[in-house]
Amino acid sequence: MPLDWAAMQNNLGRVLKTLGERESGTAQLEEAVATYRAALEERTHDRVPLDWAMTQMNLGNALQSLGERESGTARLEEAVAAHRAALEEYTRDHVPLSQAYSDHGLANGLAALAIREKSAPRMEEALTCMRAAVEIYRQSGETYWLQKATVRVTEMEAELGNLQKRTPPLGRH
Image (tube, rainbow, N blue to C red; front, side, top):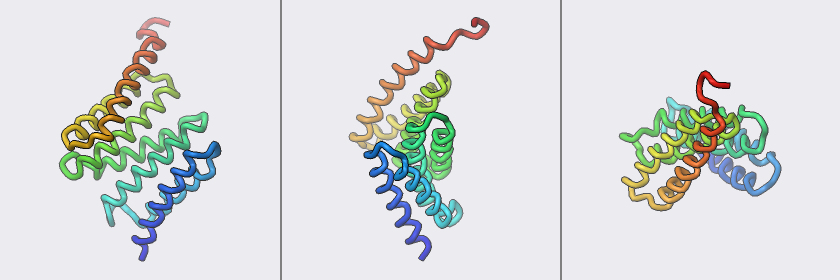
């Protein structure tokens, strides 16, 4: 029963991610990432597209948590890629609330990259994604995530302002 096994791996990954976020090290987060990747061997896009998208979104969240504890950008870039992959299936017409959750995760990943890279354009992209999530949350009546996303928009706008102050205009150095 490979799909049942993959579902259990996905659930195990969520537990490992939660535990990993409560610890200072990265071992649990790394294990969560490995567990999600194992689940994706069975939860393929062709076989179970919505389950695949859910696992991609969860993988993106775990990679972001891991990437925020590391100094480079590789894990954050992987997180963004996983969220973008989930959005192949999580569309507004098909599953709008799932799209909002994935847009939310993508926005957080892009924002983390923007801060790490000191990139105003990347933060602008993050804001676009988060604002899209806010719109869907509002339309869906999802008040808990609407509140969280609205706060993140304000935080990202402030960070964008900081990044724009640091970036010299083109042609000036």
